[in-house]
Length: 330
Image: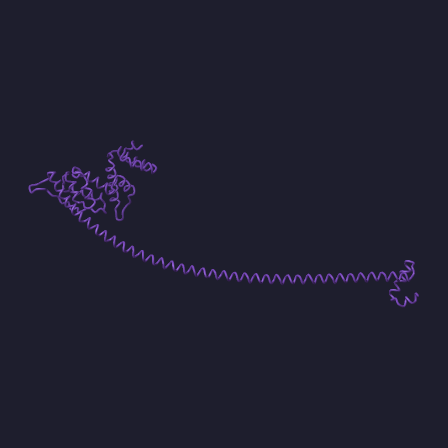
């Protein structure tokens, strides 16, 4: 029996069985059975390991396939998303191009409308200017005719006024020709008055004829100022001069501003500039009716500084109150 088994057993296995039998004091057959049992267990373990390895490889392969599938899907999604974004971008570009073209068309239309409007406004403005020019020409013609009639009437009254002054010679009324011409409202009134007074003094014009001779130098609005005066004041030179200065804004305030803002004119020498400052200052004093003394000049300067230091509401109130002394203003 043992020999039969030995014939069917591998030599290596038999040697192992002999070695185990001797080592553990068991029969060789029992040792052989243990070896076979152990080999069977080992084979099963190896099979199990191979099975697990196969399952692991299958799992890895499955995972790899899933990864590849997911990657493919992601790649397809990305391509689809890029394609969609590209289509959206092209759509936006088309819309933007259409919008820009429409804006260009609208801009051109607005430009054409603006040009048409400017042309219409230019034509209307030219027509209005022509009408205004014609109306102004007619108005100036009417004013000239009215001035001529008024001047003739006033000259008759001036001659009557001169008759009333009793200034006659053997041939009748004594006439003076100062050679000053007519005063232009666009020129300096104070300068004209200064020239008139110097010329009148040189011609030894009587004081009572100053107003009448000055009236002969007036025309237009200035002549109407003379006409609006009372018969008594038309013979008073100072009253006529004050009325003219007031009418044409040559007031105390006006001379004060001209004096304070005076600058050397082009071609004006320093001596002439100083003389002009003196004249402006004297006119300021004269129209303000300040005394030609230290006290009068002091009041004038302090009054001016006081007025300019006040708030606008107070300045307006002081103007409405009329002429006041420094004490009354305070």
